[in-house]
Image 1 (cartoon, rainbow, N blue to C red):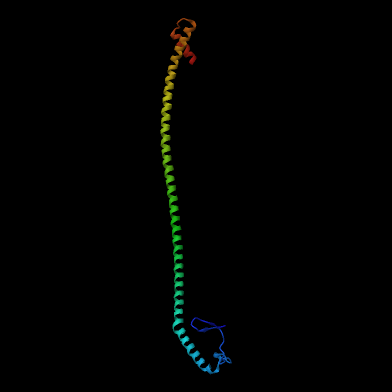
Image 2: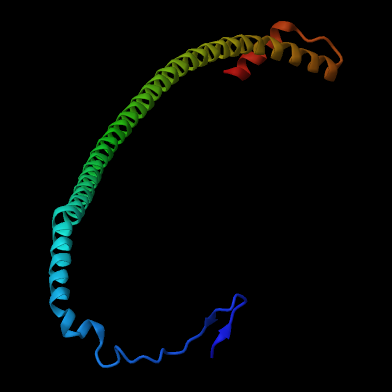
Amino acid sequence: MASQAAEGQVAGTEVPASNAHADVFPPFDTNYFAPQIIWLAIIFGLLYLLMSKIALPRIAGILSSRRNAVDDDLAAAAQAQFDASQAATAHEKTLATAKARAQALGQQAHAEATQAAGARRGQLEADLAARLADAEKQIGEKKSAAMANVESIAIEATHAIMRQLTGKPVEAGAVANAVAAAKA
């Protein structure tokens, strides 16, 4: 399965004909066992030193700084939550105080308005009572005046009626006596 390239070289996947290493796998060859163990110990030692002195302290530092950052963030969050709860409590207390104050002011304003309305009502009732008394007095005066005029009107009406009925003038004294007798 060989093929020739343009420059005349041969490339392929054929196994070489020599059987020099066919009997032992190179890492398990006893001729190379001691140097392999020495190099394994040297490389392991160097790797151990590299890891213990450089890599692991850096990783430990990173883990420690992350743990500290997380702990600080959790502490800050707890403090912020505590502060928020304190602020909420203070806000609720302020709201309750403001509500109580507003309610007290509203009740005070209502009481003042009721008192002012009562005073105004009393003043209006007194004014109306005075006007009513004046009106009743005027009505009484008008009634008295009217009653005083009723007798004269009755005399005049009787006189006119009698004149109409009889056709003769009637004596004024007789009509006045008749009206006075009917009134009594």
